Image (spheres, rainbow, N blue to C red):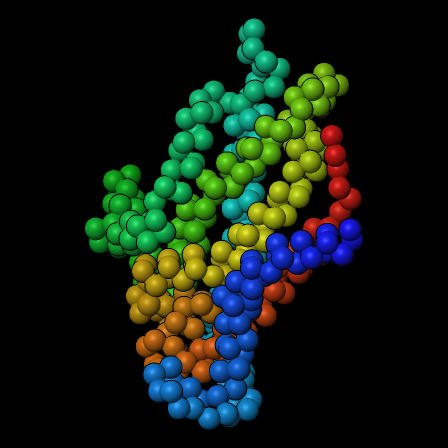
Length: 308
């Protein structure tokens, strides 16, 4: 009986694990292998060069800039995005005042409308979002500087994406705007599953909204917040940041490489400069950074599980 059970489990998992190994694990192994070669990405011929690519990486000033920008994305974007999403979700679901003949716990007025507004950016492709904001950031005809001129701040006309000191922050603002709605919906679903009696009891005891958030909502949503933190960090290190920087910034990569991130640098080295082996070396470094980020977040966020 036991033998049959294990045979069933192995047979059930064999196909998905095989596909995962073929399409996920094997490309990583290939990338690590190619990082020790001088492969151009075009020619089938290449030779082993040992750790030359890694030595070059340590002396590459642009790589260190891209690493710094990627780490900034991974650290700040989750904090801002998840913080805003938690605030918006709390106000939509629990933050309203008691209405006459209404429930004790409810969202602010118009909460259904706010859910649609917050989620709207998710309907748009990240490429469309990047294009829209590229036009909005235009220093001459963009909507942002036009609004500044319209309210009498004509002397304040930043270059935005053309300013090395502002470009990275402008890109980060776009990423926050485009992703916060997803987490609002995610956290709203989690808050809807928390029994209303818990909030009612806390409010009857004189607890403020601030107290109920940190004493009830956040502890019971902690697993969801932790997962969202990891997911947002991986987005910030990967495709989302690449698409926005590639489409919005000049170069691309911004003036003086001010918005170059690791995933963009991988793309440039592989497809623009024909240095596929060096690109895979940067990719290996990006893999290490991503795994380290996920491990740190999971370790720091570990806490006793709360149930209700």
